[in-house]
Image (tube, rainbow, N blue to C red):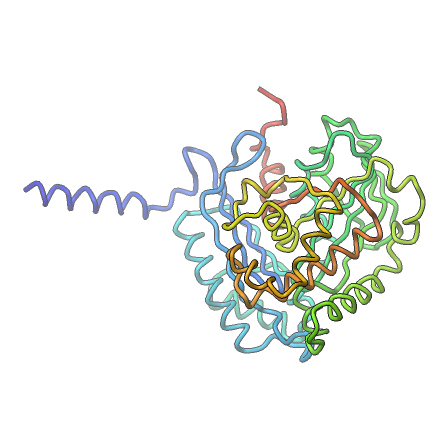
Amino acid sequence: MRAQRQNQNRKGQRSAQARPSGSRKGRPLYAALDLGTNSCRMLIAAPSADSFQIVDAFSKSVKLGKELERTGALSDAAIGRTLSALQVCASKIRRHGVRRTRLVATEACRRASNGEFFLRQVQRQTGLKLELIDPAEEARLAVVSCAPLVDPNASQVLVIDIGGGSTELVWLDVGEVDPLERRRAIMKLKLARSRGTDTRTGNGLRVVDWISVPLGVATLHERFSDVEDNRSRFALMSWYFEEQMAEFTPYIDAELPDYLSNFQMIGTSGTVTTVGAAHLGLTRYDRNAVDGMRLTGGEINAVIDSFLGEEFKGRIGQLGIGLDRADLVISGAAILQTLLRIWPTDQLRVADRGLREGMLYAMMGADGVLKREGAA
C-alpha cells in the first residue's frame, strides 16, 4: 500500500511538473533565443526586481556557419545539427508554457544564399519562427545586455561583441547622463540603421558610432586556416581585422585624448569570458566569478600570449572548452588584442551575457514588469 501511495505521489509530481503554466510563482515567463554562426543559445526567465531569474537554459555549438566562408551557403550537415538543437529549444518552450518569446538569427543566415530557405525549414520542422535581425539590432541588443556593467564614472564606453560570424562595436558617450539613469537610458537605446550617424537621445546618451565587422571567431579562423603557425596566423588575423575598421569614427580619431578620457571597454563573448577564466586560473568555468570582473590590458595580453604557446590546448581543456573550439579562441583573441592596441585601457569589464539577455531586458522593460533600479 505504501509503495502504491509513493507511486501515485511520484505520478502526481511528474504531472504537476509537466503542466505548462507560462509563469513562475505568478510571474510571466519569457524566452530569448540567439542562433549565431557557431552556437544556438536560449534562456527562459522570469522577471525578478530590476533583473530576471533564469528558469531554464540551452546552449550548443552547432557550427551553422561552417564552410560558409568558402561556399556561401549553409551545408546540409550544419542545417541538420542546428535543426536538432532547435527541436530541443521548441520542446523547452512548450514544456514551460512560455507565451512571450523573441527568437533571432544573425550573421550566418544573413550571409548564406540559402538563409531564408533555412528559416522557413526551421518553422516547418520545429514550429519556431526565427526573426532575421540586421546588424544594427544585433549591436543594440548586445549593448542593452551590458547596461548594468557601465561604471558610474565612465564617460566614454565601447561595447564589443565578438560573435561567430561578425563583431559588433558600439561607442557611447554617457558623460551627460545622470549615473543613476544610465542603465535605463542604455536599455532604451536605438541605433540608426545607417552607420556613422551621430545620435543623441533625449536623456543625454549619445551614440558616437557603431559598426558590424563581418568577421567573427569562426569566419576569421576559416579565412586563415591554412596558416599552421599559431603566432603567424594570429598576426595575420589581427592585421586583417583592423583593416575592416577604417570607417569607424572612433578608429579614425583614436589618437584624440578626449576618446580615452574616463574610458571603459565592455567585452561580451566566449573569447572574453575565456580570457577572464584563464586569468583567474579556473579549472572549471564559473559564471559568477567571471561575469562583471575587471581586467587590465596587461593581464589580457599575458593570457593571450599564453594562448599562443604549445600548452594552450591543454589549458583550454581544463576550462571545459572542447578542442574543436580551441582555434576559435585564438581568432577571438586576435580581435580582442587588436581592439586593445587601438584603444589601450585598464577598464575592460568582462560580460558573460549577450543577445539573449538583451532581448529579455528589452521585452520585460517594454512590458513594465521590471522594477526601477533602486526602487523599493
